[in-house]
Image (tube, rainbow, N blue to C red):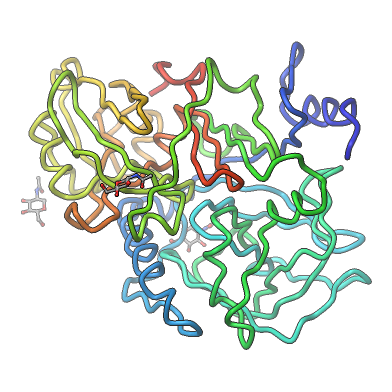
Length: 409
Ligand SMILES: *[C@@H]1O[C@H](CO)[C@@H](O)[C@H](O)[C@H]1NC(C)=O
Ligand SMILES: *[C@@H]1O[C@H](CO)[C@@H](O)[C@H](O)[C@H]1NC(C)=O
Ligand SMILES: *[C@@H]1O[C@H](CO)[C@@H](O)[C@H](O)[C@H]1NC(C)=O
């Protein structure tokens, strides 16, 4: 266990918050920075839809042990990503890794080569994972993984990529999804689960609870450190009120991810989706709704599809009339305000849009409702609500933040 004083010091050093920080349960906190790839962001919607399709397919093919999901979609680069710097080996090589709640393997070497040190042990296994936005395959090692000073995991299984695609500009992924998603990623040990970094931190007594708290803040610039992950607890300086928990849904295939049952309503009484299953996902930029739900949202808002950006667009009159979107889950309703439904206007031209036009972050999942995977609460949602991914209790939590109702866009 790391002494509380050190944790507080770390937190202060990383967060850039000057004073008055109270860390509730002694989690260890890692800053994460947001990066927007301007050359690929034109494909934002396609990326998000491909990812949703690939996640659904991956869940469905998981029972076919040893086979890999085949995704008949073009490989896109990530458009908007959150990156954490993670050390591997001793002395550590530092890698910039995508933070991903939709996958659970941790791997390195896409860009910067892996450097073997005295702590690196190669296993007899190959490891491979296919994503909506690419794939990697390589060799399994166990090694010392340093997430932050004081958050050091001995003998963490990692993949060392020999081939990868779709990951230019990052070195790999730190997978913080459910452990079960690692099943079938090893070969020949196809029946083995790989403990995630969170599992190992908990098993080694380095954190007190097997959960993660994530804070993202809305941003209007291309690259900025404006997020943090807390391992083993929540950071009460990042949310207001209490955390509402929602059990992970039993509806397949959302049940394979951080899936929840949720209904979506526009304004006082326009139903967009009746209670149905979908997922909470840090790897998706937008809020995606099943096609029939999106059609209702379009009718309610008057939005049109903008051909240049792929986003929905509204006029300023329609914006003045835009109502909140209400997400009800686990008996609590979370309100996404009109401003929170906008793409940040300062980034309009970066995505091929017109400077003063008004684009929306709610978009089409690309499939109809009723398939057990009817929405994705992506970054655009998570930038407005603190989120908790609680492996120990199989539940997801949300809390309001100072940014929930902010007019940043
Ligand atoms: C951004 O995306 C483009 C095309 O999709 C890709 O060629 C480029 O390598 C990416 N850059 C970064 C820094 O990820
Ligand atoms: C979610 O919805 C499904 C389908 O209505 C239902 O069977 C299940 O009990 C609900 N709750 C959870 C936690 O899955
Ligand atoms: C947008 O694209 C669709 C389909 O390609 C086309 O029918 C429509 O006319 C286009 N709209 C504009 C405003 O260019």
